[in-house]
Length: 316
Ligand SMILES: NC(=O)c1ccc[n+]([C@@H]2O[C@H](COP(=O)([O-])OP(=O)(O)OC[C@H]3O[C@@H](n4cnc5c(N)ncnc54)[C@H](OP(=O)(O)O)[C@@H]3O)[C@@H](O)[C@H]2O)c1
Image (tube, rainbow, N blue to C red):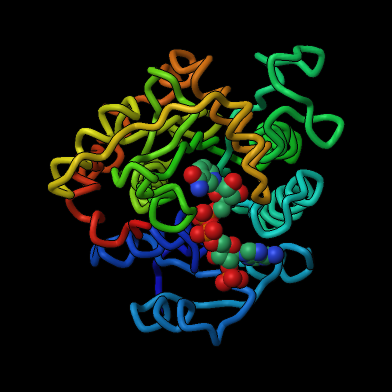
């Protein structure tokens, strides 16, 4: 039987958790071994992780007893919630609680909670620069995570709070890649003005998390913010122009226009970008690229990420 310390990884078939599972398995001398959590151990992604050498277990955050079982015997746990699976901040908070309770019951020694700011600290509900959504949130998928920091604190579980940020991979999987306009030119559309967007390659989040587990107890109770680069959308477009061999414009739209795009979550994301834009300095200050690089020496900036991923970005 393995003497390695087990790290239970939620979202193992997804971006953040997947990156962590792969980072642990890539290090043959690791003191850790990943336990990959999925709702479906027979999915292709789950089978891929098993083939790489991960233990794969079934659990569903909607069923706390399965979450408890997934934590049993684990030294560590990577806890992430899945807003976009249900669009409910309340359900997201319940998912966080299920993981914190299970970690406490199992005596887990080190939890990483993947979190984001509670935007209401800087934009209270009465601040009408952006609409209040779902009656009590400004950026629901941020606020529910930020609010849940307290759930981990209250549980008494040894926790590191990992502030993630915008994945550049949203251009691959979230429809945020360049689109050809009526003028025939390619453009990326963001409501970011001239502000810098703190971004990261999604795979690097898991690699940074692995660095946190390796550093261990010194990071318990700490909030660690990570980013691959703070870069303006104009500079992103300029990098894309070089790689695509044709001009990619930055189509700067106001947040209110983005909110009106009508796709599910457009208002939430419109508010999110407005927050990113208006609090770009505060946001970047909490996300230290140099420290992220110390945790993860492979950390990529936008140019490096684009070099490896441009061919995967759908251009429509
Ligand atoms: N996109 C961004 O720029 C960005 C930036 C920062 C933070 N985030 C946050 O990242 C979170 C999502 O993480 P991700 O991007 O790593 O995921 P992802 O790539 O979207 O993959 C979804 C993951 O969720 C798992 N999952 C969904 N519902 C589940 C449930 N009820 N129980 C257990 N597992 C469940 C899926 O596992 P199975 O299908 O295998 O069960 C899969 O591993 C969201 O809350 C989002 O707000 C996103």
